[in-house]
Length: 96
Image 1 (cartoon, rainbow, N blue to C red):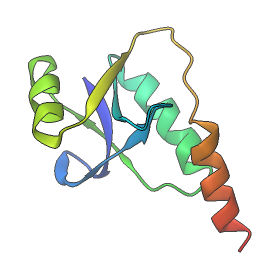
Image 2: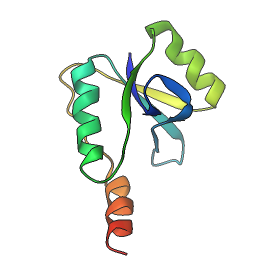
Image 3: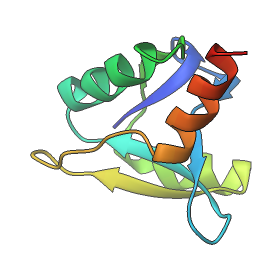
């Protein structure tokens, strides 16, 4: 599985996550590296500097349990864009 971190393959550097409508922190994992790269490119366009990292499929639940976060898996062919709140926050900071 692929996910986004501040430094490549370094969980301690920080893992990218969002909050859902209930305020739960959710980490997105991607089955295909190309999908993770595309999502990272979208975030990069608004100022996020992240790296695509990889972990074995059986580590996903362990990682999220250790962090206390929920997770979601982006299936191949799913179209995912950053949450509007993420974009508004970054764009709001950009114009200050």
